[in-house]
Image (cartoon, rainbow, N blue to C red; front, side, top):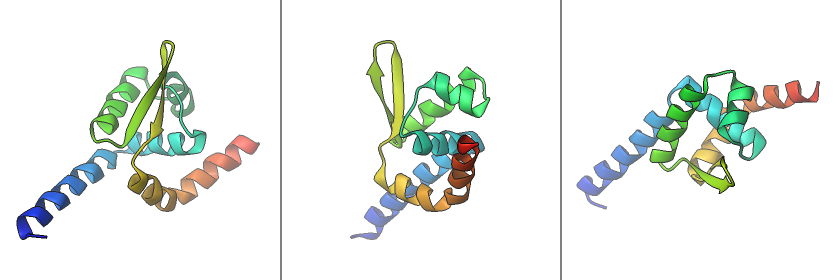
Amino acid sequence: MSLDERRKLLSQKAEVLKAIAHPARLCIISCLMQTKGCNVTELQRRLALPQSTISQHVSKLKSQGIIAGNRNGVEIAYHIIDPDIQLMMEHYLKDVLEMMESEEQK
């Protein structure tokens, strides 16, 4: 791999990391990991963020190829499609996911 190719690849990976480097987006990702996918209304309920905020951040995650949505009538259920992000977030957000799971069991 040439230096230019390596730089291009690293630049693409940096863009993905920038896309997840926001607290609201990390919340969305952790919620999608816990639920195995949900719509904006469910994200709004679970995260207590305005619909417009969630939609804005979902759009950023979609544009970077991190998540995608499946339409079911008028609803779109979002889920993580990037296996590298899924794996990385399973490790990075392990404590958060465990807390969320514990709260749901109460």
